[in-house]
Image (cartoon, rainbow, N blue to C red):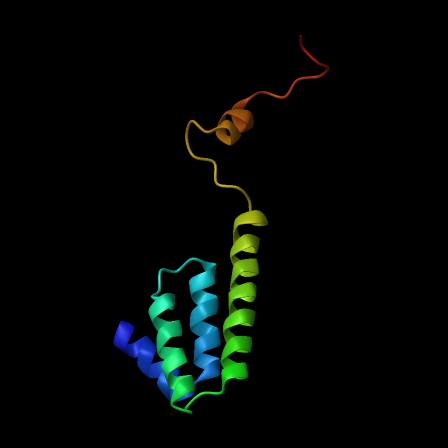
Length: 99
């Protein structure tokens, strides 16, 4: 899979860099460090523009991080058996406060 990612970056440039970094920032384990080193070598060879690569990686990282946060925040919290959220969900709801 690493060869396919590196080939995509060398073939498509900044848009592929954006997509791969965004997917990795969501939480998919991808070799981003290696990918950015390869992007740096492509920049030094003149294949990729420095500013487009910086913008693509930066925006992809921020967007992916926000998507990952939204996935964890808004659809609901996972309640593992025995966790505080699970115990709270099982408690009966009563009227008034008990001391």
